[in-house]
Amino acid sequence: NVLVPLYPDQRVSVDDLQDRMASKLESDERARVVFVAPTGFGKTECLTEVIAWWHQQERGCVLFLVDKISLLTQTAERFRKWGLRCGVVGNGIRERRADDQVVVMTVQSAIRVLNMWNQNRYTLIIIDEAHTIFKKHASLLIRDVPAIATTATPHNLMLPGLFDEMVLASSLATMVESKRLARPRVFQPKSQINLKRIDHGVGDYNMRHAGMRARSISG
Image: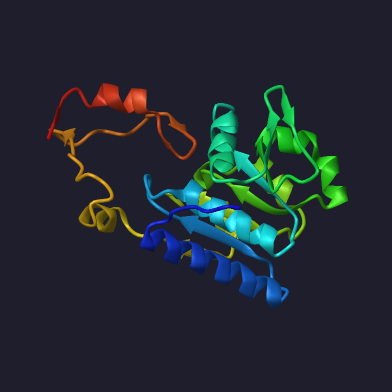
């Protein structure tokens, strides 16, 4: 059995996410939802509950996509810790069983085994760190398979075309006020940084180049 001790705001988010998905599925609409929560909220714990709920509905196995090889076994271990039957595919690892509730893969691995879609093995896709979503992710959403994207920063121009709704979790400020997170210390450059001609990558500035422009910080 899966039993995750959730905070009240996590429970609210899980219930909201499940309600949105169930409503879409019952009305035969495309079920595509972005789950937006700040870093430290506990998205993996929330998604563990969602995966367990999906399995309880007898809807099939979930495909969980991570954007880094280093997250494959780390994510799988967290799912297993809470009682999910979890497989792993990627980086030379191929651990799958017929009764898996969720399989963690990199996007590259999922594309290579695309032929498995014909077997309808995976009935829900969860894309972790969806602000890094690219065309390779979109190729896995070629049919109206239900999908959930998770991110702390939903600033990606591809998301609106692939997903229809958002579930917003507690804000960072609310989590600080409730003492779930420590109050942050903010550091900033003493003067305005000239960001012209700084390289971009994955929707953000190159941190090394930006750091070279900000020669000193105060806070």
